[in-house]
Image (cartoon, rainbow, N blue to C red; front, side):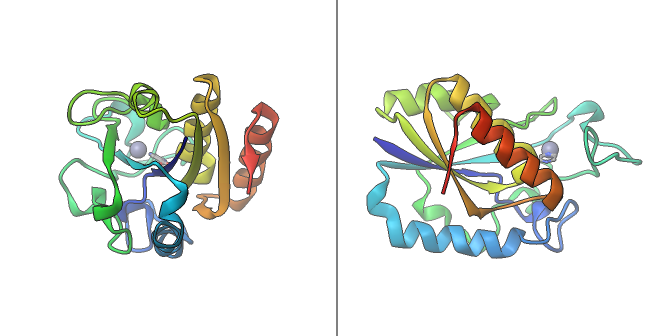
Length: 184
Ligand code: VGL
Ligand code: ZN
């Protein structure tokens, strides 16, 4: 059975946010439309959130935009909320990650009841996932690579992903495919 995994579609990663991607808002709206159009494809729809409390050197006053970043997605703040175009009512479970350390992969996240993403998906008999979200070259990539390592079949819906850097996103897609993901 197939699940949709929506990665980090949060205000701070969208225009107006502290770590904005150019296409974040349009991708948020497109993902929401995809859910409305194709809910029947999925036996589960879940999301991850970057959810920082004190993530150490993941935050920096002089970020390199590779390993360190401006302050973003602080827990409980508007910047950490889903972009308003994404209707959270259609999302069955949310996996929070990055509280006290950098965590790019959704598979480092946990739901309210403590379940991690891989266990949750297996408990729901999911063997295939479609991955969408932000940022292609960071959290989407890390989530896809971990999903493959966990033994899931993975398809990345490229039009529903937004990058920090378009160039890095091309490399990221190549790496995902080289590791066994399908692009659609
Ligand atoms: C992300 C940079 C820092 C992401 C998270 O969601 O891709 N990028 N923290
Ligand atoms: Zn972060």
